[in-house]
Structures are given as C-alpha cells and as structure tokens.
Length: 342
Image (cartoon, rainbow, N blue to C red; front, side, top):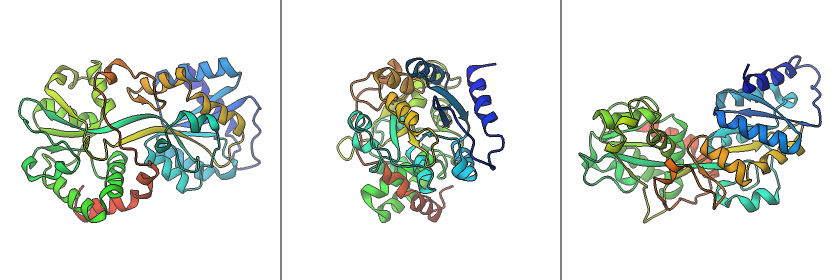
C-alpha cells in the first residue's frame, strides 16, 4: 500500500457518517483535497509532517468532482485546503462559497500580488505559461502574439484544445480583460478559421501534432513541452527538436500565465494547521518540490525551476491579477459558443 493510498484511506474513513454530526478531528491534522497527482507531492507532505508534527490526510480527485464533493458535504466537510491547477477552477470553488479569505504576512510577502486573490481566497504556488509552439522546418514567421493566431496567413495551421478546456477559458478570460469582448469575439472567429483540425485531445496531443506534421502551430502550456524535453513522452520527445517556442506579447502585456494554487475552505476544521501548510508551500524547499514535480515555475521569486523549464528561457509575464480569469470565464465560453468554436 502506497503512502498516498494510506492517506486517502485515513481521510475516507473519517468521512463515514459525514451527513450526521460533524466529525471530530485531532488538533494535529490537516485535510487536503487535491487535484494534483504527482509522486513528488508525497515527499512534500512527508517533509511538512516531519517539520511540524501535523499529519496530512489526503483525498485526490478531479478538480470539478472535488468541488461538487465539498458542495455536497456542506458545513460538515472535513476539507481544510483545496489544491488545484488553474485559477479558473479556484474561482469556481470560491464562487460556490467554498473558500475563505486568509490574511498572512508570509503569503503576502512571498507571493506576487497578481498570483494572489485580492482578498486572500486563494494563492498561486507555481506558474506555467500558455504559449505558442511551431514547426521550425516549415514556419518561418511564427505568430508573436496571441492576436496573431487569428491572422489569415496561418489558415489551416493551428491546433488547440476545445473551447471548454479550462486553460483555454482562462486564456480567453485574459484576452477579454485586455482587449474587450468585441475584440475577443473577432479573435475567437479568426482562431477557429485557422484550425488545422477540430479541437481534440490534451496539450500533449497538440505538440505531437507538430511532430507528426498534422499541425504547424500549437497552443499549449509550457510544462507539457518541458516533459518532452526531459525525454519522458512517447511520440513527442523523439521529435522535440523540431518544435520552436514563442512566448507571446513580449512587446505588450506579456505572456499569459496561470497557476497551481491553494485555498482554505470555508468550513476548515483545522484552520491554523491549514495556514501553516499554506505558508510552508512558500518556503524555498517546498517551492522546488511543488513546481518541479510538474515542470512548472516556482511562484516565489529567486527559486530555480527544473533544468528542462530553465532551458525554455526567460520571458515577460502578464501581471493581470488572475481573479480576472474566473470573472470572465462564463463570458469566455459564451464567446466561443457564439462563433461555433467546438
């Protein structure tokens, strides 16, 4: 039995009789609902336990399923913390009343303002960029901005995930914030017109499409490409040298970034321990574990990323507060739907 399985069993046992009286929890615990599924997180939890004596109880699952679970559990939920990838999902949890504000000098000082909810409802602990990739053998002038992805010169060349994908909704949310709804709709139409195929698969599939020749240009998160550089992705790593990378909008707002982040739940039974864990995540050691486990960038400045991530080079970040991604999420999907973007 793995440590992860044992942690899940411990917390699952505590959920028995959940909808009766609120379960009692020991002072030395913190209960985490996490959408992250990386082996390195186990090391992070173990180090936190060793340093604090606080036991970490873990439930892993898909983010939207965990949100629905917390809704159903209501005030009796054992969850202290919700960890997920993408600010849009943190916004969904917060919009459902599942998160509470946290005031911490440590978090406020260690994390940049645009990676924090204005009222402390969530905090970004690592970042990734959503960038443009291209076939170096056939594309001499790759798009340098997100807007350029809609330029007719790239007709039939672009591969990207479906419009309902949370990463694309967040990108569109940022586009709306910077350019307005009318320009965003024109962009969505142009992007749709330039597709090489119907949206399908995950980010890795878009990159594999460049290797196979089906796609000339692709939009994906940096960590998927970094995995290919590390030599761990069949169908991508062997053709990785064929792919070029562009960090868009370097002369404008900067490249769109998103987060893996954490929020304290509205009914956290162990709020003090939860805050200790949140603050621990900003330590130099934890930042390395949290970010490098998924080939992301540490959120705290001055901490090195993995060698694969560092090899991508430096870039100017868009410093739009990520709360805007969630606030524009519904309109983002409506705009995609209006132009018939699948």
